[in-house]
Length: 300
Picture (tube, rainbow, N blue to C red):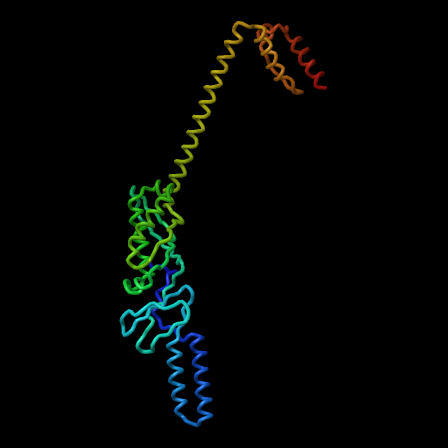
């Protein structure tokens, strides 16, 4: 598919410039004035012929342009930027070469990666014509040639790259693309400034599969973290049990603290086995009631 953003080289005839038209009009007016003074009609013919020469011979190239001048079909010289003159009929400007950085978008559709995954890849190429003579004489359509060279290089690089590398290491692929394209376009006088991959589109089914895989991986990590936390908690409980083993007073105080935390909220009810209460030395139900009342009074 041809890139619609790439314009064909300017082989079309470029009409007279405003400067050449202005000079031609001055010559016509001057010849008419001389004819009016002298009365010789030859001045009109001379003025008309001179105006044609100036109108088609005087050219103006913009600051970023170079004009490729052919003389009788052979390369003569490069002209511009600015004002220059060519000999009508003998000289011809075949190309106007733009020396600014040109942007070309290109893509590779349904191209298989090294691990046989079909992908659509969009990329953009930044390039500059460094040698106007080569760009005009060595290739028939240098802009079109650069586009096709870039697209072919992109397909080659995709075929040598795994999908994971393409998604995670775009900078390396950009550098590799630049080297390949630059090698192909150097004989045409074209220098590649940079290549950037804009987007990598995966098949819908593969996107869903990768999404499920990523979700499963996150769940696995979450379970590992939870298991690790449970192990650490168990280790701490084991250390605490060793500390309370020979210190019943500390164990009682800890149990009382746990009980207090459970019933300190108003309206809270905690059911505790009587054996635990007796072990703590709090008595039976009356002890619990007294403790609860004490907690409520302290809160109020």
